[in-house]
Image (cartoon, rainbow, N blue to C red; front, side):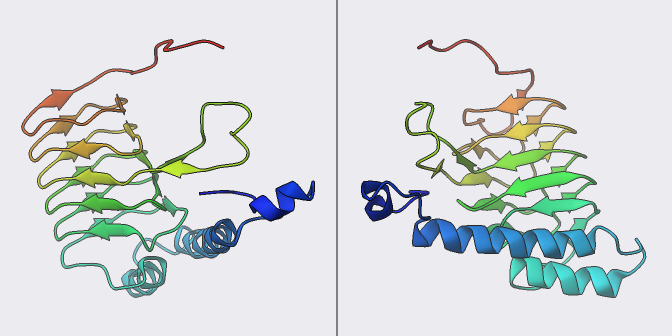
Length: 186
């Protein structure tokens, strides 16, 4: 997605593209809604349900549990199946789409990121890139794990606490550890 319209850049100006403007308006709305959600008393089930419906644009599926604080930058592209459990302090940057299958369990402070910027410094402020995240049924994601754009996690897999997941995870497997490594230099 272009951040700035090509026409404005040709004129030497930095006017946001219509797509970026629409996204940024939704980010502000989602931030307002999650801010309200995150200060409700824990036992206010009715208030939480009403705010989740506004955040997701639909009611929560049956038996979904989300413990605030909860963060999302869009909300409308986060798809939750039945029996999903999301612990405290999780973040979902879902503009490119996140799908959590039935029975997925997510530990505290896990982060799902579907959008990024190009690596090239000349393009970094001009574009956003992204890809959806797919988490299949019965996956367990440990505390503080980070799931990056375009990742698919197979059924029954386990993501260890603190893992950074940049590649697809096969079904019925355990992945652990940091991913950071020098890939190239410029």
